[in-house]
Image 1: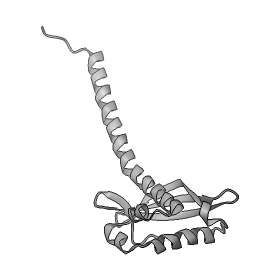
Image 2: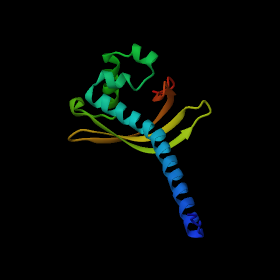
Image 3: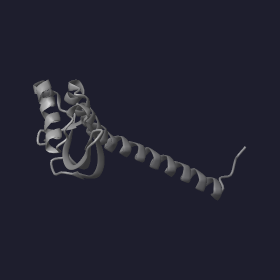
Image 4: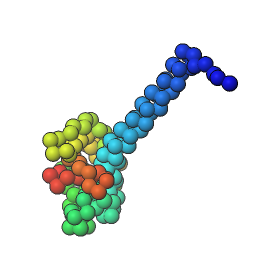
Length: 145
């Protein structure tokens, strides 16, 4: 049996192939840029919870070796002092992403609004993060912070 290829069948096949290609492209793009947003969220959560292991994972392996609990507590205190949050124990940080720009060095500059709050106070701060790829994952660049 020899089946004929009609214009409708051919158009349907082409449409399905293009739709699949677009879906794959969007998934890859989302995974690539989503890792940057996840890193900043992980960083905020690590500061909130005083979680040294998660905090170290936000940096390259070489830089993570030099970080200590006092570095994390200093960062936590500087965030609360800078924004005049009185109760450091109940500190919460959320990030609202504004823009993403590729730098000449291959790094990315991510601009985000950080919303720092506790039960009684809320402050907003605009922050820039410089991210690079290190061993297949996004980390903060040495130039950052």
